[in-house]
Image (cartoon, rainbow, N blue to C red; front, side, top):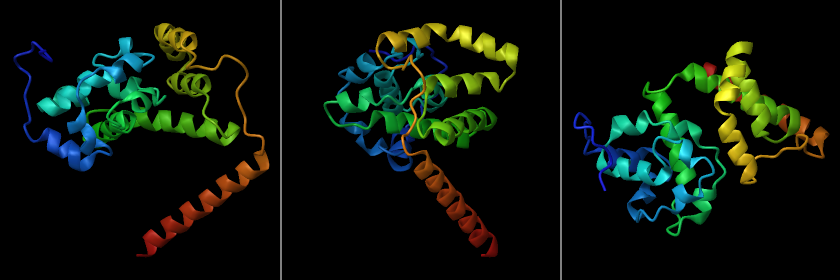
Length: 204
């Protein structure tokens, strides 16, 4: 099956090997038999321009530009269904996350946007000890401004409803860890270690 009818697509024959060497889980992609279990398991696969199965095929075909420009890297919700259901044990989620990180590092994606999302993710962790998709998403969207937040929320309402219907999004109050004191202690220790490492790096 052809990946794309775009004859202008450039193929990098060394791309698959590069992914093998530089992306976590990339060394497992040669085991993919294109069964489609990953894409069929994805709760929002229909909202991706290329599902996980197709993305893997594109990596193996050397379609570097198309892979790094794919919205699949950013639409992944990290539910790990693809990884759990892969009959070959390929860590699909890790591969997609790794490719997303490389897309930022190589300039294919905005570091500002990913920093906004990271901030929203960390906010949820520090307040609840868990990540709540609704709160993380809302904080990320509204970090662009109130009007932009409303627009982005409405544009992605279909995706959110689909996740709720598939049981992949919680609809009640945010879950919290029971030991909030312990959470605070962990975060304080992590901050202490981070500061110590930064100071050590500055001295060297």
